Length: 373
Image 1 (cartoon, rainbow, N blue to C red):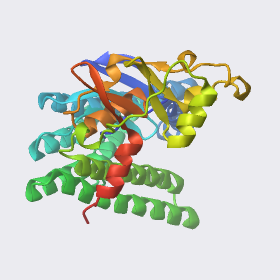
Image 2: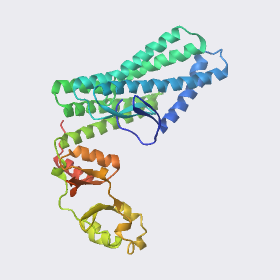
Image 3: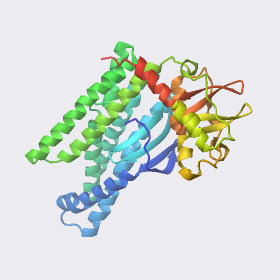
């Protein structure tokens, strides 16, 4: 599955130039899988083995399962790299794995092969583990048989046409190829993905009430898929609305600037309360120094606002927070998200000529946005 990166993940290594990360939720499911396999599955299929061998097999199975998931994501990444796409990271988490691709596939064929590479790798691993299971006995046979089954299930499950799963991306490639419209294909595939996610949720709920197995797990998967499909739909709508829009089309040209020598009391009364903005550029004799936002002001005790100067609390400017007026708005938005900034400055010939803010972009999208059915 492709997606965005998640917080709460630790990097454990680099493969093919791609950072491999483990989300904290992986530890939960690792322990759960180990316990279930060690206490139930292996004692049932190999009842005559020592107790300790079940736990060894359980740990090995859980580890090899997540190696399989990592290889599934690496298969996506390998093909994506062939199409000159950048993979920022691969994260293993409670529902499997996510490869964070930077940018979109260049054409429908690339989308198809990137998406199908993951399930094909899972089917290959399933066949490999099946052959190993046929040539060993005892606990090793049970271990490889389990891995063959689970990799086959991963391959089949990911081919369900619920975007942003692999099957949903294969579906998007087909719609994209037919309609020649990437945004329409994404929105259509996302809508189908939400429908499939709702099916998982309601079927899981039905299973819970009827005593069927795995009801809660199906609901969790359905909720996750619905959230991912909804996020993909919104992102596609955002990209479509902002397609071809340059920073100069949205930026604020008439800026209200703050002098670094004034007190925070004056800054609040004369700027934040008067204009209602969340931040202001700080200029000293025409020289841009940085940005003052409410966040920095709130970190100072209220009783000290009268004696603390703006110069003591504003965030000094960094060149990496600048962008050209001819850059795409999406690039500016990505920069703000990456740097966790609500606003960045627009520069031309090393001179600040304006500001662009997240709120400004959001207002533009709200006014101009008109999602397709």
